[in-house]
Image (tube, rainbow, N blue to C red):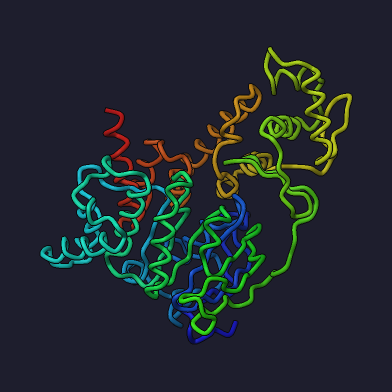
Length: 438
């Protein structure tokens, strides 16, 4: 691949596999300086893996990654750590602030490891907090801040060493929509200040704030959208578009069913809105490919108080989207879902592939009896498999997804390298959870 001399980041045919499972497949990408890129895709598409490679937290299986024109392939662990700490700032879904420290002390903490004189710590931290609209909250501890304010403190912490590139993994993922505004405004300000931002999100409303949107589908870059929101409102000052990527323009065919971490149904690439109860029925039919009697389906979805008329009405609506046979009730062959692929991966021992599919619990808001049992089984299986494998990157991802599982955060601390910035954040989160348990 010919690399644009203006590129800060250049990926040339990057692939990443865990055992026999390919998570990224031939990704080529050129990101110019001061770009603001939203990286989108369904659960299991490889977004977090790609972000980890970009931040030098993971090494690709094959391909070349060049930063400022220099290949990172031959760098040793110490050199990678120095480049990572100098050039990258990380914003994660979990805020991971230290409960016993004030906002400015949390922001200033990375300066200790950067060997900045202590007399400079508070001044730099206060300047950043003021830029992010938090000057009045500088002395407050995390428990005295809203979720949105905590995330802005985390953004300030990522900026305190003045990195060139900001990598954000679902920065609004743990916040209600009404708290997104100040977070996204903060990224807009960073973009205007010339920072290169790569932000992972699954939410179109968040992606709209970026200048370029990049889609990952099954480990491949599938779409590249040119800048839409140039700084200053003039195309003459716009950030340059991302370089063309392999696989652009490909489109998913047939029916796509996703149940983990939420719910989504697509037919021929178009999302179809389906009410929660119909998603419960669909999940039970997917989980029982040989079919269910009406009585079985009724009990699994509605429980003892369910009525056959209600079920028949729901099935009639569902048939408008997916083909369902009767006697017994079952889906047409060829339809599968993310949680079935997860179970297949676990059965083969491909833990990384299973975790890549695990965007969260199965239909987390559902109270259907069958969904509840299946959800508990899946959660337990993926958790057990990751902890038994003992691979730091995978444990970190699971900890981020689960959020409040102390044992998984403690395992991440043990398994991540000391030079990995995620290790400190994992330790902070574990400390916070221990305090909540006491």
